[in-house]
Image 1 (tube, rainbow, N blue to C red):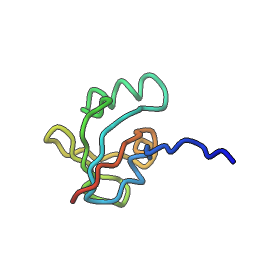
Image 2: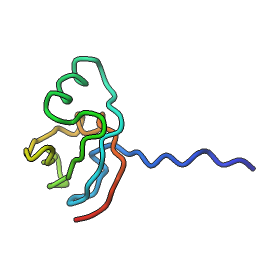
Image 3: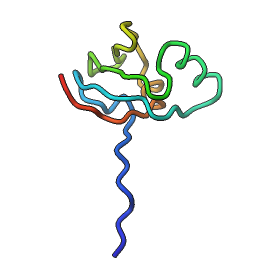
Image 4: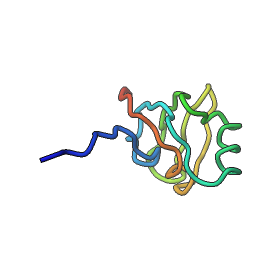
Length: 83
């Protein structure tokens, strides 16, 4: 029996409050992806989810940014743990 490959990526909205992650993939339309890159959420950026209830407060590149649930669903992160 073959198992599917383990994918450690999850949407930013599912990252626990206080946890760190590394942005690995942006989904959504081109304009959205460009805008969140401009805000600092580029691929391989480190992000900390400060608050767990939408809107989500995240810290990236020393800035705190509020994201809607829909936006946080489109930012795929690799969890790194840590509080």
